[in-house]
Amino acid sequence: MQLNQSEAGHRLAMAFPCCPCPSLRPAPQHLVVAAHAVAKRSPKRLKYSSPGSRKNSQVQLLQLDPSGSDVWRLDPIVELIRSGAVGIIPTDTVYAIVCDLKNRQAIDRLYRIKNLDPMKPLSILCRSFQDVDKYTLGFPRGNSHGQTNVFRAARQCLPGPYTFILTASKEMPKQCTTFGGSSAVSCAPRKSVGVRMPDDAICAALLSRLDEPLLCTSVRQRSEDDWMLDPVIIADTYGASEGREGVDFVVDGGERLAYPSTVIDMTGLMPTILRRGKGPVEDWMLMESHDSTESVGLEGMSNPYA
Image (cartoon, rainbow, N blue to C red; front, side, top):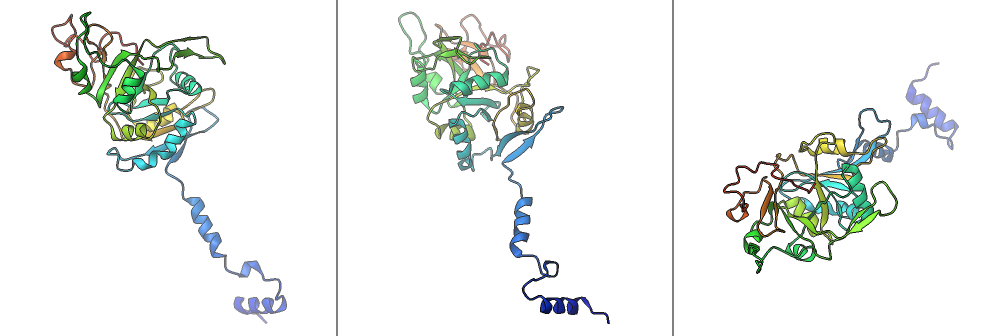
């Protein structure tokens, strides 16, 4: 006599009441829910692999609205920076590689990731004019030696797309070389420092959550002198690969335009434009030896800052 499936299951259950057959019982609901949870991936963390590498590296990619409406999501990035991470953030010009100003190991990593000359000076991203006054001697107020008083005019340009090179104060950490070694080869006071105060909602929100300014350098192609503007490509390029260090995070604030900051040296008797960039050139910025700024191109004169 043939039994249908329901009758067979009923008889089997009556014969073995303490040993239910798992194949004839419905799957527990919690297992189905767990399967859906595993399938859902966090959009904050993506895995990148460079061509030819055998290892994948983890780069935390945090995508934010360029308007800064969701900057509360920056808290994990703040903790990463405080723990010594090196990452990439948007500014009001191009993207920048940043780290804690006073973390020696993080600074060494930044130099290695960017493959910079260890004595190449970097700029700092300041939270406010209090940081500028703390880590520099401030903007020139004029003196008996002929230095021009541009204090008020210069401060009106910030926040904005400018890098002002100012005389460093004793609070500015020394330029220490540990590149490629475990101990410092030399430590010398920084005589000057490039100061930035970007007019960018994401950058400003991140800086306001930190205790100190950030050391920074602009993001360029590894093998070329071109700006990198797409944060996803930046994350892929600057992620770690076999035999090469990479950044720990990238804050995606949207694509940028290829306009770096305008760099102005304020350490001499007169302001000197080292590079014309996104920041408009005001009358007081004109160099003493030039009647106009037409001869100073986008790259300008010799710009020592990375």
